[in-house]
Image (cartoon, rainbow, N blue to C red; front, side, top):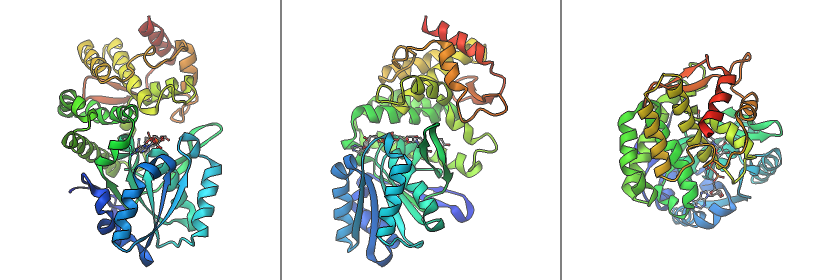
Length: 367
Ligand code: NAD
Ligand code: GLY
């Protein structure tokens, strides 16, 4: 079993990664099962595909499982489902010493984390992520949230889990499109500051997406090591280091907004196209060698991810997309910080980007 520590003083925790870990969860989670029970929150898809494994393993260790099953999908990160979840947890007489288990993708992890942060002024929670996106990104680092009418992830907290337990074999039941979308967040770590990992991704993405257990486990381990180091350095995104994790997200958010945050473009797909755009825009500004930007585009295209406006199914022109960017929650004092790159593995935060120029670039890039 690989172990990665997130070093945050009193809020430190371990990330455990092991193929088949779900079938050993009874042993691993026993110390967290106060009074011999664990409440497990999941969604209906994961309940069908993975809950039976967790349930069997916990029961074999004499741990009673209280499941709470929510509908799948982004709309579950809402006030309505938060209230429903909190009421269900209170009905189960959850106490502050209890641990709530979040079994699922980023939707379940973000919602359960937020619920745990406010229930009885803070209960413990454990992340058991079952999508690649959640295994390499959202389950680590303590960002929790629900969505508001005004936008995504606008209501939430920083609240760290007590443990993250990752079993790469849970991805066996995940649709390939979701795995591919999560892969965008894997290759992101290479593009940010690790060219050797980008080269590994270039050579191994096909095996990873085909379900090779070693490739999956290695990619997850490298990704959470990178994220744990960044979170330990800048837990609340104040120094600018954690902001590097938003590579591709400003362009991506505009593309997601244009496609209505729908199944037309999954979050990871928007990030993929956003990263390609960020590299090509950096090349246009003369910051990044054009051949490096081309390598990024070619890699994303080769794995079947969107890499431009057309493949992201975006109809809007540059001005409309920049209009979406103006509502980005990173907008501060009329400036939108942008992640640009001097090359693969050389991402940096720029506050000098002129949005009119971005609009022109987007129109040129489409042509
Ligand atoms: P998701 O949780 O909606 O899961 C995607 C789909 O896969 C769902 O239909 C789900 O039911 C299904 N699923 C999950 N695991 C499965 C499995 N093993 N087998 C079969 N089906 C399975 O989506 P996601 O991509 O995991 O997460 C997206 C969310 O994560 C967004 O709300 C985003 O805002 C959030 N996010 C948060 C952070 C953070 O740092 N907190 C970072 C990135 C993204
Ligand atoms: N996914 C971005 C972050 O955790 O900061």
